[in-house]
Image (cartoon, rainbow, N blue to C red):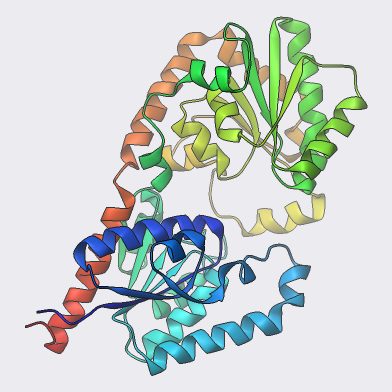
Length: 389
């Protein structure tokens, strides 16, 4: 019989908790008596995970907050490393949070512990020199997207493309009528979703130009209606204050429900980010805008190596959806691009067909595929050490 398997895991974000819980379930199908410990969130704990620290202590964002918390974060990381050196697991899996997890993985690997990193940092796009540390830190990288795996293969880092859990969860055929019913929106109206972002800085930079773009579109298509999801109470207040400062729009502001908003819409005008992947999986034609303060843009534009910044275009390896950048983000330009989907319905339908193919390409039963890759790493380790009877 096999020995009891111990698996160390650390997640730092709510999204990582979702991935971790799914991976635990899939691994338990192979190892019913497996022990999971480290740092996990509510879903993982509910699945039987032993969390040594509260996961939300790692969930820090921005520039100032991590610095304020740095002593605590360094102390937590040191204790996690020491625990797993003293009690070596069969494998350690760091999920996302690369700034925290890669150092843990590197130190554990130096002590002969197998290490996995689940969710690639955007090393293919910028700060590519990080690949050197990654190569020293991980025995296996699990990527959500195929072009990420290609980058690691080029740099001789062991990698497995497992697909994206969102692609598993979102139906191949969106249900626009149901989404509109949930949001109490007219089933027959032409609807554009406006999504300037979930953070205050994003809404400050993109919100006003999005509302002006809506007015530009309305002058040409008076039948249009608009809907915008507010990520939280603060964003709703910010959005409503911006809207009060301009001429009234036929617009509905809803709390959260960004998924339903996109599913209900005929097209989406949105900020660049991971939500563009969700819009693609919902088969929604989109226009993607990216705008930063000039100094931040000047710095980042010199670091980024990728020809595209929206996930649909990155996945396709070509320009599928319009990417409007910095000074080009004007009401007229945004309006022109979004109305093309209404003026050319055949092109919009062709884009949806392309989105179906991309959805299929990353719908791989991610948790099961990730678990299988981890099992192979564990079993190879056990075979090498002669611990399997």
